[in-house]
Length: 511
Image 1: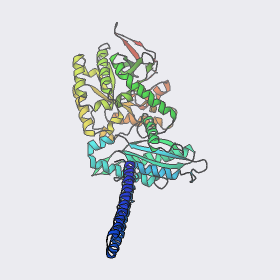
Image 2 (image 1 turned 135 degrees about the horizontal axis):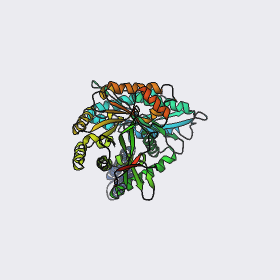
Image 3 (image 1 turned 135 degrees about the vertical axis):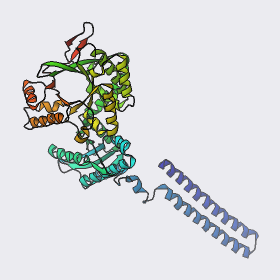
Image 4 (image 1 turned 180 degrees about the vertical axis):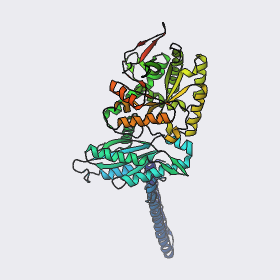
């Protein structure tokens, strides 16, 4: 019920009660006086006394009614805290956070440490739905309470901390304008929240992403500010889990751009605006091309080439990734017949695609319809898939391998792999992330890190392929580390298959 309407109704009833009670009392008194004119002296006294008593009673009733309706106008103090506190975690609620910010930024209150700044930080537990699905709602609630306790201990004495819904938390904290201090604080927060949680004799892996907005007296709308932190979180998440980003106006423009992409994707599918290009994968010892990675390209009729980094995440959020993914697999299967025998094509598959219970059956159907040897198709899955339900992922891997396709773990070295769990999965290749390759020769520990991952692949009896190889020095260092399969501009740019004469020609990148 609307609080303002209740207040107006209470005032109206109060006025009516006072008016009618007073009018009734006056009428009784007038009636009593009239009796005195037609009765005896004794009757006059009794009538006057009766009128006075009636008047007092009427006014007393009006007073009681006034007090009663006044109590409806404002909630009792005992009721207020329930709307300001989150009952599950005992942190502030979204409304409680807003009140605390208004108090902190009161016009009479001096804020900031001279040149300091207040930041509003929202932290979201990533893949929280997977935790609930895999371990149950009670375990999920335990995770929320543990994370709430960690945030309260870490930053609660510096500013308000709230749970603002679902797996999303927020807090305000005062910092200097030294970026090193901000970085240290956010690293501490991310590391603390991301510690594993022990619940119901299980160890739950937790990941989080954070978005920040600088607070001023002019932007205290919690709803608007939290929307901005959400945009910052989306930017941070695009770089991988466990990151944080500060909001800037360009992110709002980016949100509008994403909405445009969302509206254009169905039309692009219908008009066949997508294409595949292929980057060679080379055995550096023999010099032979042993495979290609299929890379998706979208050429918009007005905007030109739109890179996958700008539209894949939108397709995932809007449920279009399944249609696009099936198109990619079908085209790769058709193109595989144009390559030499034994050369494979690696196809990137989004974790969102794997969530579909029909992914494996759709893959099998496409292989059959295109008469493709499954051994020529390699399914590439990013390392982040390993944070999902272990049993479901293992079962899907086994089904894919049963079809005859091989599996590669992509972007290895940037996520949060559980090595014990990794050893249980039936995959055949690790792909060393390009960010690790780029550090070779520049960072002292880069070579040791690469050697460790190569040795891990050998211990697991799987192949290891390095992505993003661009220089001869990187080739030499990778070979010294024991890695012989490589992919990158050093060996060639992505290629386009020419169906007419079954040849492969280079395609200059437009993205």
